[in-house]
Each structure stands twice: as structure tokens, then as C-alpha cells.
Length: 173
Image (tube, rainbow, N blue to C red; front, side, top):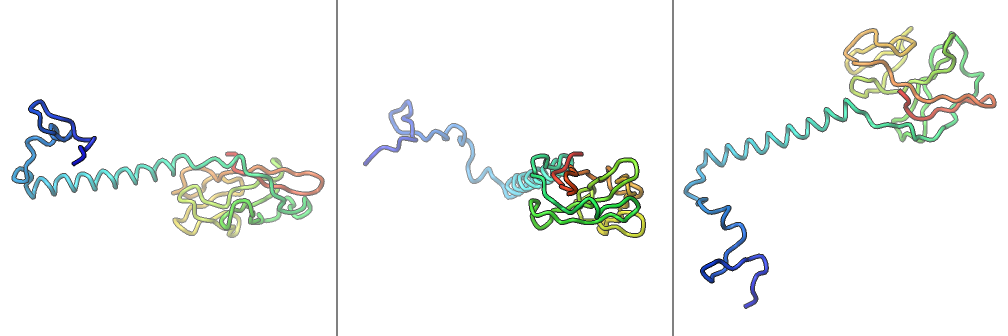
């Protein structure tokens, strides 16, 4: 019979498993039902805490999208000062990509990512403000929070105006 390479010989000449020292003292009689359930619950609780911790980090540090290629979304004539914002869906962002584009008097052309900064729900333009239907956050035309729970202003996307055409890129702030 071939020897198992994972089994180390003991000092007495007989083979001893590498985990034998660690398992010494653990007998089925010592692992009570209460101890087993306690270990199981702590393990499950730890895994759940790890999962929620990962989600929390994702919320606090959303992925950077500055390397997204520019995409044409229209002509400069489509966006006039005083007009309501226009939603343009972008192909490079997948089915959920897009930007609200508006021409402001002082800042010029501005593009906001189409997702709320609270829980990434897509928001819409209602009356004279952006409104998120998920939890009621609202934002003014400059992207500032006017009604929480959104923790920060809307994220801006790169906008380039060139040769009468408007291009939108990734998130810049």
C-alpha cells in the first residue's frame, strides 16, 4: 500500500496526520449541540457582516468612470439656456447609462449622471427640479441636494462641445 504524502510519521514509528495535534482533545463528546450552534451562528453572522461591509464600501466609493469614451449625444443647438434638462441614454454605459444635459447661464453645458447619489435609482425632471422616485430625494438645476436622503450632489459627467456637436463621457465628480 502506498503512503499518503500528507501524513507525517510520528515519533513512535506510526504515521500521524498533520492536523492531529490541532484536533487533539476534540472528541465528538466535547462538541455539544450548544457549542456547535454557537459556532455556526457566529460564522453565519460574520459572513453576513462581511457582505454588508462590502456593500457599504461600494456605496461610499462608487467605481470611477473617467475612462469611458466620449459619445455623441446631440448638437449644440438642442441645448439652450432656460430649456429643461434633456435625458440622453448612452450606449457605452449599457442599458442603464445616460446623462441629464442642461445648458446653464454661467457654467455652460453640464451633464449629470442619471443615477441618484442615495441608492443609484434613476431620477427624473419634475417641474423645476430633479426628483428621485425611490426615496424622495430632490436636486436643483445645479445638482445640489434640496431634499435628503441623498448624501451628496448629483455626479457630473464629462461634457465636450466640438464642431457643433455635444459629447458625453464618464463621471468626473
